Image (tube, rainbow, N blue to C red; front, side, top):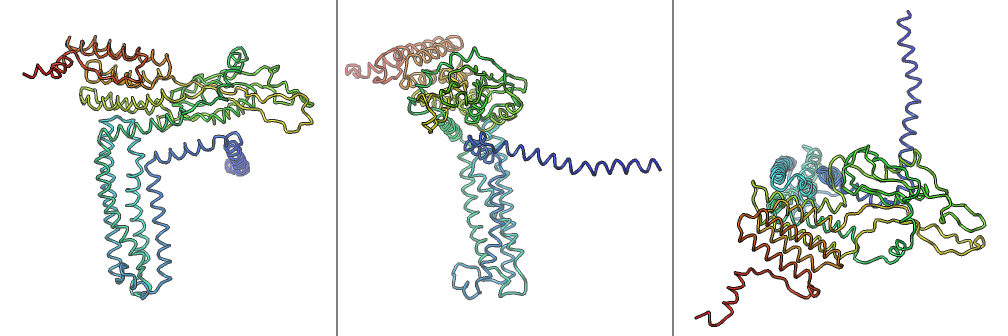
Length: 549
């Protein structure tokens, strides 16, 4: 008897605790939902929506699934419209289908089978192109093919037409000619079948162009330019520069109480939600400093930055009003701080789409590196990549780089009766990030190609030409020194690896002319064109009339 009662007792306890567990789990999820849509999180809502949208486009199922749902919704809609018209009215439409139920069923069956077979063919072609692109251009370029909305829409149109045809086929009734044939629905299916045939031709033509190296380079270049325009501004913010120049916290925060911040998870740092981090630093009265760059790989044990606690006697808290010291006093990070920090940073286990400039430039660089491999041996493609990177770097040198400092302005009290001393609104430092410099971008792009093209004179001369092209975009003396340093590395790489002395002398002569061009104070008004000594002699003789005889 005892053995029979014990299981019943355990089961009763489980039944009693089950509602409590459900309530606990529900409250936990509600708390997470409230934290997700809190005021601090909503500060970066546009960036979070953009991040979610890019993730949806990066998946190959989103647009096709949307097309399937559209087909499922359009089928009952057209069937309902058919029920509102009689056959006599539909016959007045010349292009409308007016056959019987057998003809309609045959047409819909043919359309459904044909578009499903073509959808399988397009999917097979896509897989073959992805396999070839992965081996020729690198696996990092696969996302550019997967996120191609044209391919996704073509596949979605095929399977959407298939789902629509199945539902319309189900609505065709036998022995009921008057109302059993949804003629407008069948007509729309025929139109969709013709459109699918045209889309098949477009898909083949699009894939032929998509696998061309120039098209792939252009796509990666457009992504890099979009990220550069996102981060780099075409004008200088005077107010922000004034805040940086007159803010003493930039130099003094190193002496404050410091708390290390560990990465909330392992992976690649894909997104940083700056407004949320600023609100976090403001609520805890300190400065958050991130040492990890966007796109860097970290583990959950890595220290990604520090939180500097502002002293209680800091001038920003000495508000001279009738209600003195009403501001939030600084406090140490607690459990809620680390939960909010985890929502400010987005990590992925694999590199995905982000606004990281280095990742975009790395795609073009990877194409050039694979083109220089012994198995491919395509220096022309590497030269095209160098020219594409020159365009991106030129835009970066001419624009205003992003500032690593983020401020917030305390709210102004409109109640003038409480104010005894009028003070100007000052910006308070809240966040310091680590941003790569133009020298870092040149090294990770042109420098990476240089390290793989040490024995290729064509690519080395293209790199030298790129340095002279970037000289037109430089705006200060520091950028000149960066270009001269890279030019010296190009010259040294050719001296140590080129096989013939004539090739070395040719590269040295070009580098020397480029060096003189960069040092020239009037370089912006001069045209640089390298001409070797031999070609110069031939050109001079051709220009002399006596040499013609």
